[in-house]
View 1 (cartoon, rainbow, N blue to C red):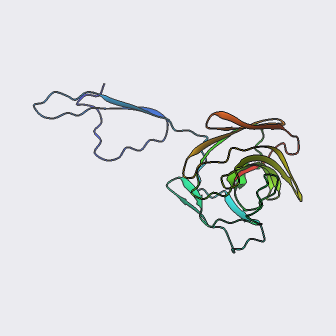
View 2 (cartoon, rainbow, N blue to C red; view 1 turned 120 degrees about the vertical axis):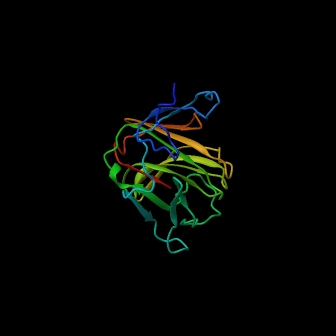
Length: 212
C-alpha cells in the first residue's frame, strides 16, 4: 500500500502501458486515508482514428461536392450526409454508395476480429467495410434506420450483392458495439454481443477496413 515515502503526484498521471494505480492521501496530524485502487488497460490493438494512415474516398455523383469527416476526442464523425442515389428507394438490396474513411495500412489484414462503436443522429445508413482491396472491392456491413434494415454485402467492381439482411434498423443517437469476426470464408457480425448476420463467401481473403 502507498505510504508517506511513496511518489507524490500533484499533476495528471500519464500511463504508457497497462497498470494498477493505488493512491492514498496523507495530512499532518491526521490518519492516512483509505487506499484507492484502479486498473487501467492499454490495448495495443487500438487504432488511432486521427493517425496518418487514413484516406477518404467519396463515391462520384452525390448532390454535394465532398464528404466532411472530422475527428475529435477519439470519435470520427461524418457531417455531410454524403450519399449517391434516391432516398425514396427502400429496398435493402439497393447499393447506396457514399463515403469511405479507409485505414490504408491494413491492406494485409486477413482473419481476426474488428470492433467498432458507432452512433448516428441521422436516419440514413452507416457501417463498416472490411477486407477492402479498393474503393469498389470490399465487404460492407451497414445499418439503416430510415428503411429499417441491416445488410452484409459484397462490392466487387460493378457487381454489388447483398449476402445477408434483416429488418433491425437502429435507434438514433444510441451507441452500438459492432464486432466483425473473420474466419476464412466465414464472415460473422455481432451487434451488442448478439449475432446479427453471418455468411460464407470467398470473394476477398484479405484487405483493409473502412468506416462507411
